[in-house]
Amino acid sequence: MDLLSGVSPSVWFAMGGAFAIKLLELTELHKLPAVERPDFKDFLYWVPFFILPLLGGGLAYAYVSSDATLSPVLSINIGVSAPLILRAMAQVNPIESSVVRTPEDA
Image (cartoon, rainbow, N blue to C red):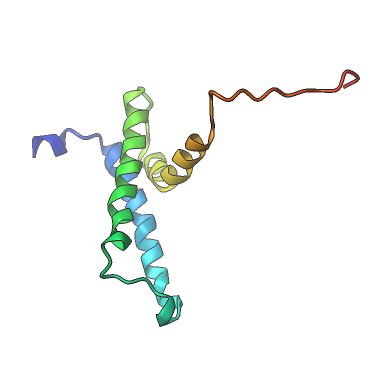
């Protein structure tokens, strides 16, 4: 239990923000026709409810470990946007150089 109490509040807020997004998606499912609704008995449906809060908390932890000061609202925002931030970071390939060529008369 000591491990959980040592976690920064910013990490908890970020995890809560990521979890809230999944809950929001869950509340919107009543608008879908019954045949289009997911199978709630399928384990894979529930996996993002665990992974996204971990990603959000991990990203907030990276900020806190970098000596960034996070307010609760900013932490929640990081948790909510963590999947988008990590996806954008994964799509950038720093090994592949992209040379921008401009015309000589520019």
